[in-house]
Each structure stands twice: as C-alpha cells, then as structure tokens.
Length: 216
Ligand SMILES: Nc1ncnc2c1ncn2[C@@H]1O[C@H](COP(=O)(O)OP(=O)(O)OP(=O)(O)O)[C@@H](O)[C@H]1O
Ligand SMILES: [Mg+2]
Image 1 (tube, rainbow, N blue to C red):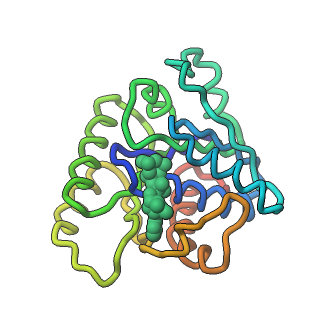
Image 2: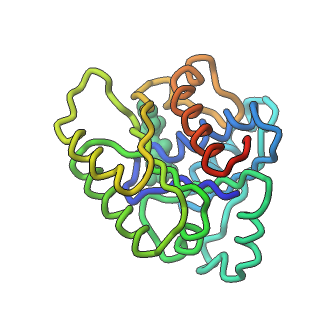
Image 3: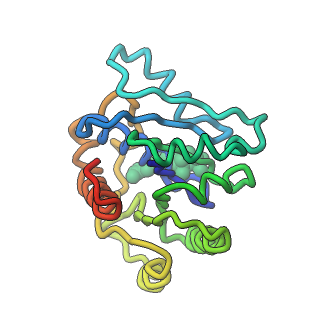
C-alpha cells in the first residue's frame, strides 16, 4: 500500500507526523515499512542520516527520490507494485505541489493531510483538496489537525471543518502543539512523544485498517 503525507502548505508538520507514524507503526506492525523522501529538502532523509549518531537501531530504511527524475513513476509497474505490495510504503512530500507528484497523488491509497487553522493554511488546504478532486485521485484523504493548541479558540474551525468533511475524513484527535515533537528522531519515540501522538495515530491506523479491511 501507499501512504503519502502531503499538503500544499509548508511547515504544517508533515515530516514530523510522517516520522512519528513511521516510528510508531514499525514497533507495532509486522509489515515491512519503506520510507521514501520525495521532498527536495530531503528533511526526513537527512534526519534519518543524522540519527545514525544516536547509536540506536534503525527502525526502517529511508530512500530519496532523485530530483533530476521528472516523472519518477512514468513506468506504472513501479507505482502499481508499491500500491499492491503488502509492505507499508510511506512517502513524505514537500510543502509545494509539483507536477512530479501527480502519479503518486493519484495512486496513493491514503493521503494524510496535516493542517492548521490559520487563514493561510486553511486556504492552501482547500486549494490542495480541490486539486486532488481535479486529478480524480481515488486516494482516501485523511485530515489531521496539526500543532493544535488546546487553549486557543480558532475562529474559523467550525467553518473549515464543515468544508473539510466534504473531501475526506477528519480525525477527531488532533496532534497538539508539543515541544517534545520538535526533537523527534527517526530511531525511537520517547515516552512523551508517544503520548503526544498516540491517540491521533491509533485513530489513523484504525481508519486505514477499516478502509482496506486489513490489519496494519
Ligand atoms: N505537533 C507539533 N508541536 C510542536 N511543533 C511542531 C509540531 N509538528 C511540527 N512541529 C514543528 O514545526 C516545524 C515544521 O514541521 P515539519 O518540518 O514537520 O513540517 P513540514 O510540513 O514537513 O514542512 P515542509 O513543508 O517544509 O516539509 C518544525 O520546526 C517542527 O519541529
Ligand atoms: Mg517536510
């Protein structure tokens, strides 16, 4: 299967959430996890490389998809192979959409979309889901409130939520704004980090299991 973390807005927590998901799933699932960093900044990959210094065992391998390749999935065999595989193939994308992402966005089983309630983020999120509609992507879209501040009253929350549920599933459990998530590593989730993401990730995993009628 293919699970892609994407949105049209930079800095919403895609990579942080993708790392948290990868770490979490690799400790609870028997499936092989393959991570593909498809962002020109290669944040996931660089972090994974840097984390070698921690001397903790690798939980998974991370591959980069080279920038020079304009259409990395022009041979559909590759992408269909990833989609039909029993492995969990996780992609982390950049915060700017690019033509080279089109095939992946179409063939992903799930697109995980972290979003915030700032006006800019709200607009970009809706632009992104509109584009997904235009691509006729069959991927299930799962929205996660990211960097959510419990004590803050987001004025546009109600309006945005009612828009979002037209385009996909909105998880009940937000990922709260937490300092401990700023120092996430690709080798482990600390107790605090696990506590910070567990409810959202369990809900996400249930959602994936239910939709594919599998157990991750
Ligand atoms: N839940 C959170 N609580 C606190 N800080 C967070 C949280 N999630 C992400 N951050 C911080 O926000 C910043 C952006 O996060 P991240 O790099 O994961 O976003 P991104 O969407 O992958 O960005 P880009 O679009 O550049 O790839 C980072 O400094 C990260 O540590
Ligand atoms: Mg990123």
